[in-house]
Length: 470
Image (tube, rainbow, N blue to C red; front, side, top):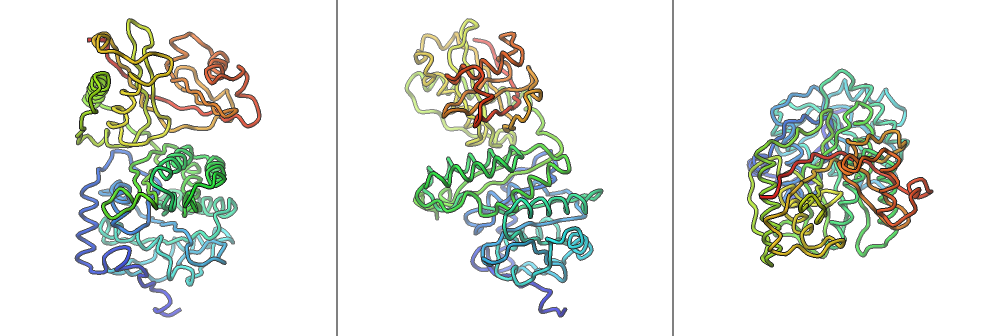
């Protein structure tokens, strides 16, 4: 095969990202410099692939996790926007891909090994020529690793047959190597901003669960609601599912959202028609616990939020430089008075960075727990605060998985929901069966509702800390 067929030319330089090498390098370097790098090393990433002015800041949060780390195998898995009849998996197996920053050689030995691993994987160069989902990731990788070699993989149809075949091939061929698999996908396409955030939070929660069936169920449920403008929950369903299945295959079962935004979050975007973006990483190790200084900061934020809310004042502006508090996390804030519950509200999926999430739910705990009247100023000196930072939800396939004292539970059944934090059964002296019955009763359902067809039961862990009344 000649050079013309083995060097893939850029298709979207000058539209999705700058065509001028200097301008492109400056833009990518700036985006990476603005993103934090965390301690936990990723085994796989999900990053967006829209124009850099829209999704570049989110993509940078994903790619920054690779900075200063060396890998001997890099695979970028993209999706198919432009070839409607391509249903298989294609690897560009020879030559190089060119961007304004130069040529990126194909890791031909790795590509050949993947081609040999499954009959579903072929070398179909034509389907790559106009597709942008892999191309837009390359300048980030080139600025991180000037000597980069990689393998581009396109998933045609996002069937589980394709996903399982590719994930198995990756796990087999990459075994024993320092490898990173990067999945390219945007999230919801073209609803209004408010709808996009609802849809994307559900999609992110499903991805973090590492359960492909939950992703399929989430897509079916939201598409069935016929939300105006919504045409897909994720254009890269195949790459996303591949990253999830691959991560589970290799034991990288800790998934965390690094950054979320949509196209309306930049000055050029409209709130009437948006696209969602997320950076997610999968790792072998969990995120480290919060340090004492971060815990104290969050408790101060909660205390100030309750004080402002109770006095009818706007919540104070927040400014934090702590990388741990910039991560999107789900959390609950519990208020007690003389040892008795006074309010508890929270979020089961991450909606914002942890600092703002604590501020938001602390105010709700004081004023908007329907079980209690709003907190009044005279009570403020007597309130104790407890914050629970939640891990991602995981579906429960066998109740024997549930460990009292480690796990909290979330139930969706009969159009109702209920959540109990991990500390609740310990405080009440419950065993597992009593815990499950109490969860159902809290949802206003029969105590065995978790067993019924259609019920969905999830478990999670929480980092819990607090302070007594002052």
